[in-house]
Image 1: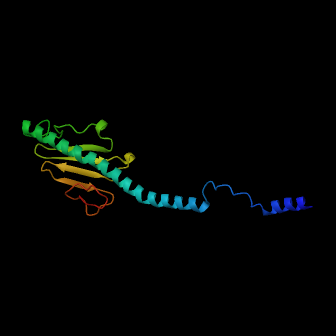
Image 2: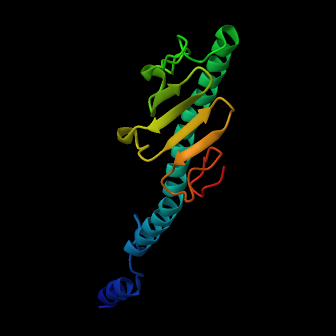
Image 3: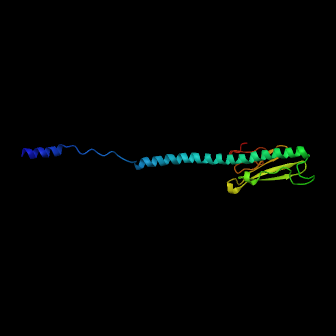
Amino acid sequence: MNEVANQVERRVSKSPAPMAAQAGFTLLELMIVVAIIAILAGIVFPNYSAYVVRSKITEATSNLSQTRILMEQYFQDRRRYTTAAGGATCGASLPPPSTSAMFNYAAVCTDSTYRITATGIASQGMAGFVFDINETNVRRTVSFPTATGLPLNCWIDRSSGSC
């Protein structure tokens, strides 16, 4: 009987088997991570979108400046901005479509004046953006979706409406 009692006592006194290490995440931990990612995305995405628009505006302003230089060089050589005296065709060529992915360019010329305009292409996310420059180097923002009081004699490059 002693032997049976000892076996029962050993079984009863044994501590329960150690618990296995926990694996994975709790639902609460996952929800916290998702909430942090959502907050960061809410901050980062609008800033990134504004950055992309500013980079596209740079295309227009640099092409307008470059075309202005070409127009002035043409004028220096011929003493007029048009291809023929009294004509309406501008002497310098506009940026070709292959180099102007975000804007379309147009020019209106007389012998002594010109205005070159860059108009945003809607399919490229630039609808409502219009910039121009003239022979006196007046740089204007004609249309900008978030700006008021247009046209302004500067090229707006920020959604805040600052030049």
